Length: 456
Image 1 (tube, rainbow, N blue to C red):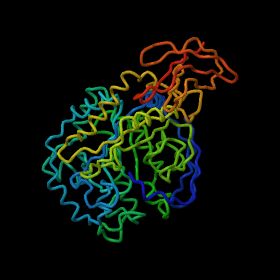
Image 2 (image 1 turned 30 degrees about the vertical axis):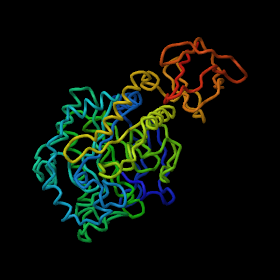
Image 3 (image 1 turned 60 degrees about the vertical axis):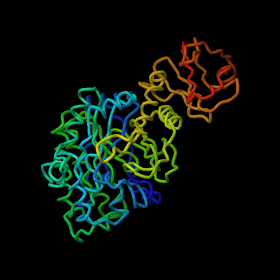
């Protein structure tokens, strides 16, 4: 993940359209434009998309060699310390010799996230540093072969997820600061000390070989979460990622597996949902979430503090209220919320993050019906909040309202209105263009006052 590198984007070169059922592939081969068949998702894939939209809440895990350094000395994000501190690959490799997370307990992790109300986990199988946090047979640079830990945490996590009914997704970085074949460097990796040569197609063969491993060694998975396409956005390699081939490989091995790419572009053919980094869909505070909102399922990812990987010094944690309100804001925009934590190098989760997840879980026990299985409601986001909907029930999420009367532009006939927290009835008047809810100012200390409207 990255926030600073992509704030100054050039004009979008690939204006692609997306559809939930078929897309035309505009990618170019090295020899020029070649028409390819439209992507046709399978029924199992479409069912997985619906499940994803119902799931609403997931956990992101950034964990790797960079976790050992805790971001100390990095000018930016802790997981970018190899780049930010200009550590050559040959020196960075030494981190593997003392990576030994003996406190790692996959079942404990998954139980923590399940209690938080999360329905899926995305973990960094390989980040930009090129280190495989899984048992890759095509590379010696792995957690199994290069560390005293000598275990496969991805295998253990996959087993724990299956046991506890949580879906597991794999983050995979398309860029690689370690591979000598990842050349040209793109916008990053210039300080890795690698030779100024490489075989791009050989690197992509290696990438696909690792993806094949991830899709065949760990049972059914939720999907692949790509990042790093943007590294070559302004080089001749932009159109040489062979996405059509890679996406076809993934869908052929596990048709239900969902593909997402954090490229900050309109969705490419073969992708199954669209993600937004640290911005709600339609917002662009980070400067790089400029892609239009397509018709695919949506997701927003966010950090607990200011970085994705573990940080020794960043204690600027977002409040539970802020994160719950972001979760609600995402649901009201028909999107999922993917909340990150950076596990510590000893394999334990940060205690502060565990406490936050527990509070979110308690909130969802009361208000989960207004989030899970819903879609964006009939009223677009307002300054006071959002709406979600499930069947004939519309949930009005009041995030910021202090008056006794709230106008909601819903014209359908309403049978009943109740507060979700206690089931008490809410009075309402029918007025021009909608209804007015009476006595529904947000309660002191409440993250979100939710009113359930039962439509006739």
